[in-house]
Structures are given as structure tokens and as C-alpha cells.
Image (cartoon, rainbow, N blue to C red; front, side, top):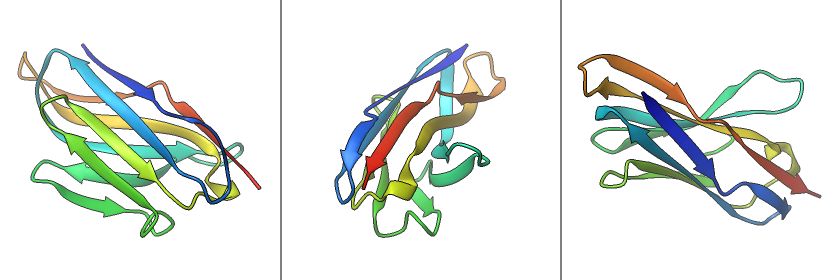
Length: 120
């Protein structure tokens, strides 16, 4: 089994910063990519950023220039540094990881989500 545990959400004023963390654990052989998604009330879950083994990254347009995704390969942890936060960034942020288990099976796992609230 693969577990993802997120942390770092909270309440921040517009213009502020937050850093989200997501640690993967369990029967993992390799992680191919890790990503952050978000879901605001009444809206569909949307991609925020992804980091692929080899360290290539991709961002949603709203995240470019403000958010940075990074990964600590030794700790199987992915981070999302969010700067210049706006009220419209308010959402539950979810971590996602995909890879191969130690039983040589592909996996895709979600974290439980962490709330980010940006006040105006």
C-alpha cells in the first residue's frame, strides 16, 4: 500500500505565502511523478503542478510565476511553494503520486487533502 500525507495548509492573507508538503510512504519501488491538484467549493478538481522523474515540471497557467513544485527524492516528498496568494487560490489541495510498488504493480495514490484559505 502507498500512503500520502500532506501538511502545510492554513489561513493566510492575500499576498502571503504557504508551503505545502506531501510525504509518500509504503511499498514503493519507484515514483514516476508527483503532482498537486486543488478543488474549490462547487468546482471540479484541477491540476496545479506536476514534477516528473528527471525533474521536469509543468504548471497550470494560474500557477506560473507564483507557485513552485519541488521534490526531495531521498525523502519521497513533494513540496508546493505558493507565493503571492490570492483569494481565488482558496481550495483543498491534494497531493498525487504515481509509480510502481515493490510488488512491481503500478500505483496511483491521493493524499487526504489540506485546506488553503486566502483572505482578502
